[in-house]
Structures are given as C-alpha cells and as structure tokens.
Image (cartoon, rainbow, N blue to C red):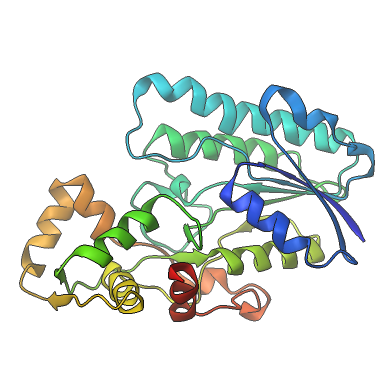
Length: 284
C-alpha cells in the first residue's frame, strides 16, 4: 500500500489521476489537495510515500508581460517550496508535472530530453521549477519530472476543444501531413500508476504510441460525430508560409513532437487505449 498525495485538486490531470488510482484501493491510499493559501501543508506529510505535483499556472493563448510574476511565482517558486517540504518530511518519490514547452512553444522533433530551450516565460518558468527540484533528487528522495505533450480526453479544455469544434462545423479542411505528439488522459494516468509502482526517478516524455497530424485528428472527430468533411491538398502550398507568418496556423500545422523511441517506457504498457478508440471515448 502506498500513501499518495496529489496536488492540484482543480487540475484536469490531477483529478483524473486521483480517480484512476482510487480504482485500486488495495494498492493506493490517495488524497488530493489544492495549493492556494498553503492548504497543502495541512496534509499528513509524515506518512506519505509519493507526492504528485500537478499544480501550476497553465499555458494559455494570450500570455502578457504582466503575468510574468504569476507564472514564476507558481511554476517555479511554489514548486520548489513544495518539493523541499516533501523531502524534509521523508517522502520517497516526488513526481512533478512539467511541460513539453520547456523545449519551445513549437519544438518540431525532439530527440534529446536534455536539449531544452524554452521560447516563452511559461516554458521557462516550468523549466526553472523542474531544474531546481531535480537538484534535490537522491536515492532517498527520487524526483521524476514528467513533460507531457498535448493531453486530451473526456472533459478536457484547451486545444482539443477548439479542434473538436472546428471538426464538427467545417465543410473543408487541408489534407496536410504534420506530426504531433499527444497523450490520451487514460494512457497518462496509467503511465503515472506504473511510475509510482516503479519508484523511479528521471525525466519522462510519455505519449500515445502514434504520432498524428492535425488532419488525422479532425478526420477522426468528424467521423465520430457523423459530420462530412472534404479533405483537400489545394491549400497545402500555402501552409508552410502560414506556419512562418501566422501564430494560429503555426499552432495548428507545425510539427510538435517527441521522437517516438523516447517514450517507450515499460514496453508501452501504459498505452492501454489506441488513438482511434481514444477519440471515440473523448467524443462520446
């Protein structure tokens, strides 16, 4: 039996991990807490085996300079305080949710997990937090940093919600082959369960076993919703120029992926739902 505290009670990822681990009460005693106003200090830290830190200020579409202090205050400073508190109280494993944005907001094909170069203060604030926390890691306090890509699933918000809306309405869409890393929420939860069981430390980049294009995503969502979309190559000549000039097009059609070999943990046992099925479950 492992005693686990999840930080981030309003986090989509944190709440889903909490519900996932609670399916095995014989193996995990799970609690969840917020991080505002130091409420996290009220937990019984003396008996914890694992802390999973999902708290943080998330990436948003329009980051402005006046948000800088907030991002660093939460994603760096609060993260470090929590990790030091966990180590002081004998926690054995600290799992920190960082971000793929530590490699840049549009990072093309990542082949080296140590080659970080954030391009926004969101990405840099996440990186500064996970770098500092990793310095605390030793054989008695094992730090695992998880840098997931595009996370989606039932009830998710953000990019997936926007793409889903487009897929249900548009009559036409480019048939353009880019490559994106994604991870379905159940696959991510199972990854965390296996990471907890292993007790390991290090940097992790879990993802679905299939790299997909934005076109693949729109096609599967539209099929599930019985909405006909005509996919055409007609606009493909303009997309590379659009990627260079327009943020919205870059966000939709630029490559943004991990090399698939980087994510083969435990022989892919955490990939319990394939891409097609994950879209069906998300859109159900």
